[in-house]
Length: 122
Ligand SMILES: Cc1cc2nc3c(=O)[nH]c(=O)nc-3n(C[C@H](O)[C@H](O)[C@H](O)COP(=O)(O)OP(=O)(O)OC[C@H]3O[C@@H](n4cnc5c(N)ncnc54)[C@H](O)[C@@H]3O)c2cc1C
Image 1 (tube, rainbow, N blue to C red):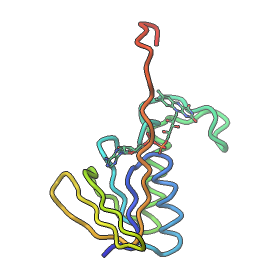
Image 2 (image 1 turned 180 degrees about the horizontal axis):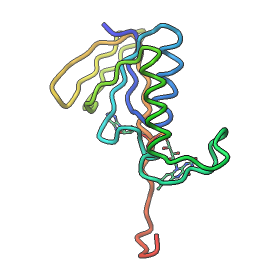
Image 3 (image 1 turned 180 degrees about the vertical axis):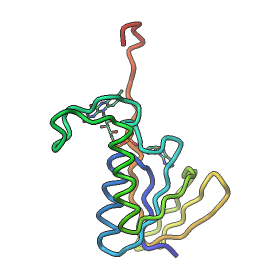
Image 4 (image 1 turned 90 degrees about the vertical axis):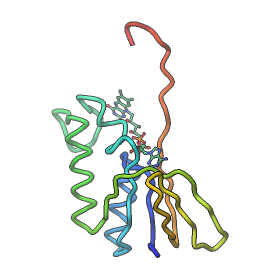
């Protein structure tokens, strides 16, 4: 039984993982198909505080992951297929690999999909 599972490895999921691991909850984070999330797809991130010269999106998310792991997050490369939520828990997570894991708490941080206009210049 896990204390807490976080689904998604973007900025939201990894931030949740940093906080949960600092609270000694030893979270398990499921990366999904895009480890590091959407920010890994961009070059310069210019609006993140602390980086006056902009930071590469991939590098930034790699550092998020290292920070989460340093505090005790376990990162698992897999995708959530189905979740059975139960009032008061435990919740049951089904992964595409076939693994089934029970957890006391679950954070879903699967992001959003940008809606492209389909322009050549996009
Ligand atoms: C091209 C581009 C450039 C951008 N540039 C900037 C910028 O410069 N500055 C800025 O502030 N914002 C920028 N953004 C927006 C920024 O990327 C998002 O706000 C941010 O990534 C949202 O983080 P998130 O963790 O909520 O979701 P996401 O980054 O979308 O992460 C979602 C995560 O969920 C995982 N996931 C999804 N489904 C499942 C599943 N079933 N099981 C397990 N995991 C799953 C994915 O693998 C991924 O790891 C940009 C976005 C794009 C597309």
